[in-house]
Image (cartoon, rainbow, N blue to C red; front, side, top):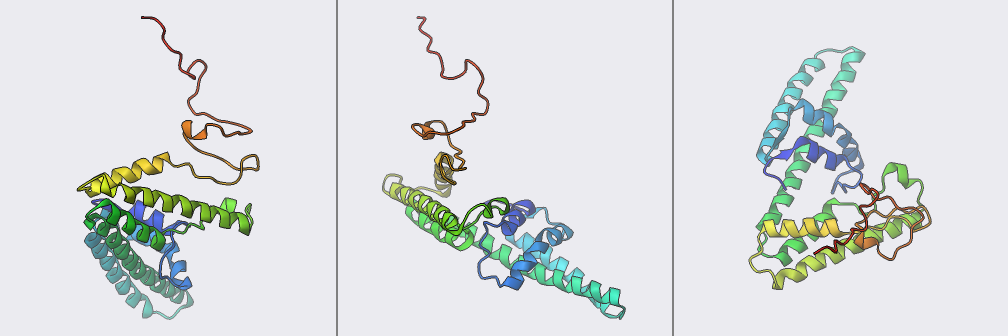
Length: 238
């Protein structure tokens, strides 16, 4: 949630494989590949919902004028150009609709009155916009259906437990505003260890040192570690 929503952030999320793209047909999902191009041509850098809507509306009007010019010609090259402009118009209208819905959903989170309401609404947002069945393209082929389903269930369980923990703090934290909620979310995410694969079977665990206690690994990489820095030596001098 931002004061001004950057083009890079919005488009990156909408084009990502983790975005569920709610209520979009297969044809509309195909149009999302044009989101980056049309948002650049519309000269969007960042802005509030109304500024996004205005920029995309102005861009649509420009495309419609250009379309009218190409429709007056009848060569094959012009027909191809005409189809491309029509596709851009469809993608622009779709982007405007989706961005408006996404920003409206995000900003509604700030209107909730306590941690429990905020946590439950966040659960609804994630269920609507996030696909827990997501795997990067380069890894999807390495996992069979059972492994992919296990990962999906694991992520869903982690998220559900996380939301329940935040909601349970409602009775201890009175008058929790959105800033407090955001901080709790940030701290909670930073403390999570997400299982991906299996130990000793090609799995990778990325976690803080304390969270990895008692677990065995075939190899361990600790960024920034140098000789004599770990464990810390106790200074016994007075």
